[in-house]
Image (cartoon, rainbow, N blue to C red; front, side):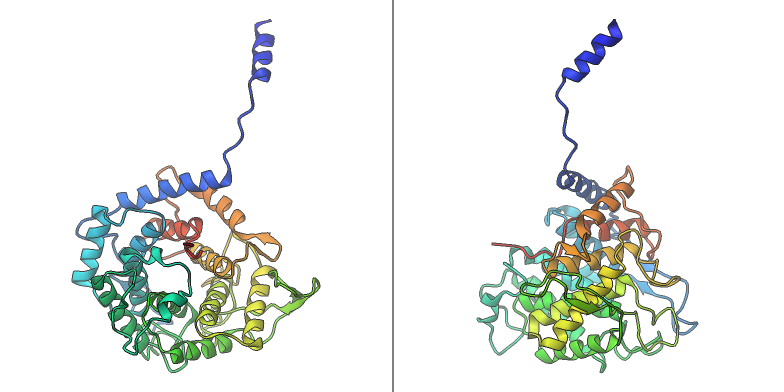
Length: 395
């Protein structure tokens, strides 16, 4: 009788709705943010990335003394961390004193993104900022009158942008160092994605990046994309297009002309990086039919091989590795293009659910497929995806 009474009472109680995906993501971001802040060291920041292997037994192992601290600071600010938090301020003090203009393209790019975000880039209305562009002077280094950045941040961004432009290769892309041939090629899609993200950020803040920089980058991206691809249904909605429109799934590799087979095989991370880069270039210098089709073909590759559970492609190098890096690149594609669906799949909902299932009790997102520190970098990439860091800010 008692058991029956309990069952009746349970049935009479109102059912509580499961937490929405939005609320779960918000709670997850807060936990991830707390984890990263707890890892901060006053003297070392968030540490450094250091490898042991070389590229095809040539050159030196990778070493990023500034990149991890800059990248974590960028991710934290995108995730809503207080820019006046003592750990954030100390991180930028470390970067300013020890690594103000790093010698590696990756670090220059990431540091520019971090400084711009710290200095007030969130105040920018959107990715194009025609308001600022119309008021530019002929001197690209002059502090714009109504810039959202303070002068000290603006000067730092200018120095980083100017150095990054000098690092652009004759091919139009970026590598680790200027004319960096010892590490596998003169330019790669990975370094190029961050360089273009940084320069487009500098551009929308008022820095007059020469159009030739984006024109050369466009040429490089067009040449790096697969020349051919299987015909597949269009992966994203295009206003006015026929419902049965078809495109060719053409992806991107790390270095198309590399002697290493695993470097020249297309994969999800580099395809998303290539497409996102094309979208940024289109926003800077416009487009034509061939470039628009190249973007659609890139989305077609992402749609055909869509998954959030792995970086799709051939192992052992970029296919199956740098998983959360791929997710962040996928986020940039979806949000810069303002598309919620790719290949009939809700990329954010699927990616968010995947990540939420893998967050540890500490708040970390461990990505075993990326470079060390895997928990700190994995969490940073996860936060950039979950906060939709590339979505234009309104108002």
